[in-house]
Figure 1 (cartoon, rainbow, N blue to C red):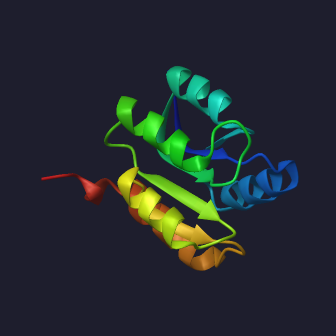
Figure 2 (figure 1 turned 90 degrees about the vertical axis):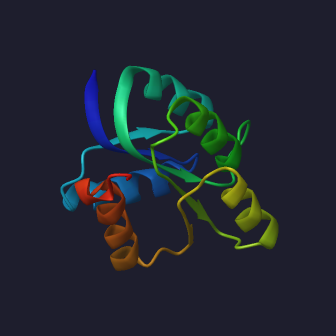
Length: 126
């Protein structure tokens, strides 16, 4: 089973390519998926340190994906990216066990810092 730093999920192919390229330039090992069901399939085959998902996707939104992923991998941190920081989304993210919610456009420096913190071995749970 391959170990990846990040699984990045977004139905927008351009945004997925752009963000995955930025993460790879920052030396993260990134797997990508264009929708929730393919992300869940990928999680069955690969070990992932962090799931980063867009909120608004067809079929299965980011909150639904996070809930499914957290059932199978309760210790895996999940980040949500959304264009609309609505209270319902923020509340849903908390209920789905999402670690961080980021708004588009991303503040890349803060985003990378949060990723490094989530993947840090010092995040061991006591």
